[in-house]
Length: 413
Image 1 (cartoon, rainbow, N blue to C red):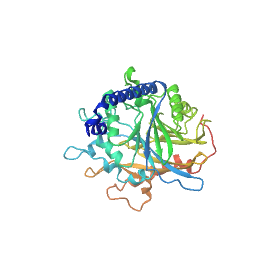
Image 2: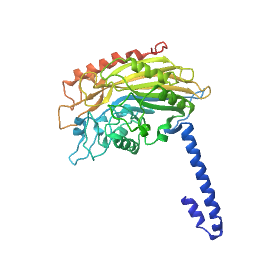
Image 3: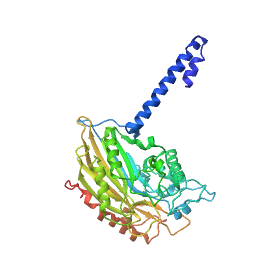
Image 4: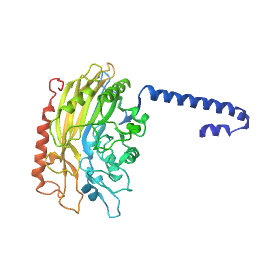
C-alpha cells in the first residue's frame, strides 16, 4: 500500500488512473476474500515453517538426513515459580535449562508438550490443579533450544477460554511454533507443516479431554479434543498437503502408569490407520515403552514408531519415575530422487530434574542422567543425590533399551 501511494505521489500525470487502480484492487481483494471463504469451507490449509536453514543435499542419490527430538511434559508448579522469582518481582527460568540446552539444540527440530497456561499477572500464578505460569517460562523454553510446543492437554482450559487464547498468543510472541489450541476455525484447520531441510513434516496434536472445562460449543475449534472422525480426517488432510511425514502428538493414557492402556491403543489406530507415520505421547508423567509398527498404505515411512509416553521433562514431581525424562531423537532420511523416506535411527538421552536442598541456588535444573557415572557432581548438587540419579538413569535404560536396535516390524494391537 505504501508503495502504491508513493508511486501516485510522484506526478499528477497518473492521477486519472486512481479510480481504475482502486476498483481493480477492490475487485481483487473481494475475489481473494471469497476464495479464502471457499477454502475454509472445503479443505484444510497448511502453515509452513522452515527450520534450521536448508542445507545442501548431499550424496550421489541426492539424500538428506534430518533429526527430530521429542521431550515430554513441560510443567510449572508453584515451587518452580517461587524459585524463579527474582528480588525485583520478575522471573528467570533460564537456569532450569542451562545444563541441557546443548542437547535440546542439537536436533534440527525439538518438540515437547507444554502443560500449563499463561493467563497473565491479572490472576495468581499457580500450579496444580489450575496452572497459570509467568510468561518468562515461555522465553526460557525458547532459549533452551526447543522449537515447537504442543498445547492440547488436560490443563489447556485451566484459566478458561481467555487463558487459552492468551496462551496461544504468548507462545507465538516467544517465537515458538505450536499446534493443539487455536485462535479461530481457520487457524485450527491450517495444518502445521515444518520444512526441515527440504523434508516436509505435518504435525497434529490432540488431547483425550480436559479436567472438565471445555470451550463453548460455538468455539470448539479452540481445542483439539480427540475423536476418531476428527483425527482420521485431519490425518487425511495432512497427507493431502504432500507432507513427507505425518506426526500425531497425543495427550493420552493414565497418570503414573508405565504401560499403554486400551484407550491409547484405540487412539493410536485412529491416527496410524489413516496414514500417520509417527505417534508421540504425553500425560502419564512417567516413561512408557516405544513400539515400531507397519504403517498404512498411504503413509510414507514403511516403519513407523509410537512413543507411548515420554514422561516429565521439567516439573516439581519428585517421586520415582516422575523426575526422569528423556530426549528421544529420530533420524529420518529422504532420497529426493526416489522420494523414499526411511527411519534411519532411534536414539534416547536420559534426563533427570535436580531439586536442590539449598534455597540460595537455582532449583529444578534438568541435567543429563549419565552424570551419575561421574566421579563427582557439581558443587550445587547435593552429595546424596547421586544414588537417586543413578536409579533414574537405570530406570530409563530399562524402559528404552529395546530401541537400541530396530526390532521386526509389528502392529500394535
